[in-house]
Length: 112
Image 1 (cartoon, one colour):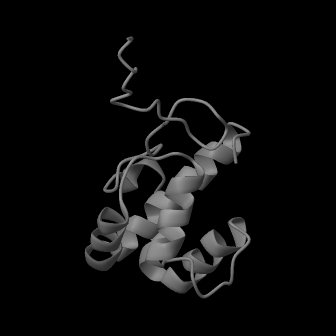
Image 2 (image 1 turned 30 degrees about the vertical axis):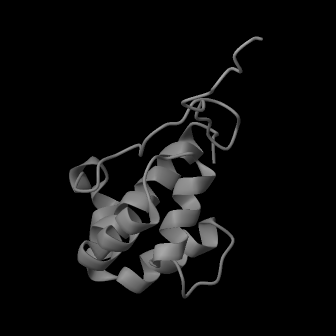
């Protein structure tokens, strides 16, 4: 009798079927796009509305945990809901700026 094959790890793929990728910039990488950082600091609600609009969502949810989780899941970015919650709660501005920088970079690569 032949032993069954046991799969220990599953291959990980992103939304487009390719390998998973991380964020385009780090959480505290504000200097990589100063305009996004300044917009986040001085007009947080404007940046939040831009992110929500970019993602086709309600303008009031751009800085939410759900938005970060949805974006991360859509692009196959590793992480967890717990990570998203902690980052959104304790680094709200940086979290939103990171999402916007990622959107801008993916848009420039025609991957958004």
